[in-house]
Amino acid sequence: MRYVGIQTQIRRNNMLSIVLLLLFPLILLGMVWIFLALLNYFGTYYYDQYGNMVNQLDVDVVNDYFISTIPWVVLGVGVWFAIAYFSNASMIRRATGARPLERRDNPRVYNIVENLCIAGGMEMPQINIVDDPQLNAFASGIDQKSYAVTVTTGLLNRLDDDELAGVLAHELTHIRNHDTRLLITSIIFVGIVSAVMSMVIRVMNNIVWYGGGSTRTSSNNEKGNGLSILVVLLIGLVCSAIAYVFTLLTRFAISRRREYMADAGGAELCGNPMALASALRKISSAPGLGNVKREDVAQLFIIHPPHLSQGIMSFVNELFSTHPSTEDRIRLLEQF
Image 1 (tube, helix red, strand yellow):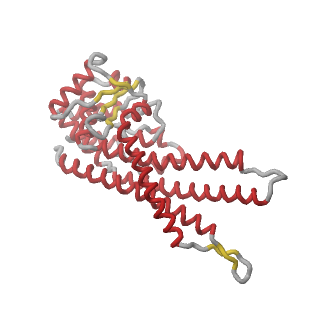
Image 2: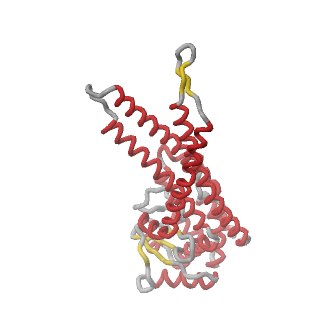
Image 3: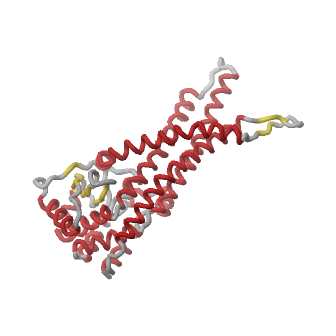
């Protein structure tokens, strides 16, 4: 098996990055329209001849309100993305507990990365390390200033030089293929929807526990206002959940094929596919990062931690998994 089609993979990832940049704002705008439509539907009603209340949707009114909100939604998304664009490296470091690694700190790792970059005709990315006994590595960043390869202390202690070179070559291939740009873009926009959902849930919780109750002196008007606010927030929560499902669906765009491509490119770059296969076998025995509980960040890892796919979300995470099985990856590398 030869590593071919690198330019095709790069073009594909660049195109998908643009699609995600366009798709996520459309999802958010769709969420806003649905929210306004539900608000209008439940707030607009009349009584029929039998005295029954009938709700009615006024599409023209909804569209008028929606058009007036478009600039604010676009502006909000733009500001969020701009902040994340310029601070994505520090955000990933905080989420994983990583710190920069210099040559004097660990000449072994630094020299291996430097030699691989020379062989691949790449510029040297930042090297980070996480103090964690578990075995993992990942690449991150969206441009040359933010590109980074991160490894755990557990990985350095358990792998020999050839195995470590295979892992680092795999991560460098992700950078060369612009996989990291696609993944970071996805993480940024999923974070927007998650933040909106968290805000709605927090406000609902405050209303229910602190402001949603009624006393004997409460007027019917106050009760009605409290109920109306709760209904609005419930509608907002439903819309946020719908938008979040759509953002998960966009993860299908992040093909599992990128991991196979990175394995093949890493094997070719280090010149030893069996070493990479051996490294994957060792990493699979204890993958993960103790500080990381976020599924969106975990999709960067060379092997997805199994503890993030347990419980009620196990089926969903498997359905939208961005990683193929480790066994399949090892089998293909052994046929390289």
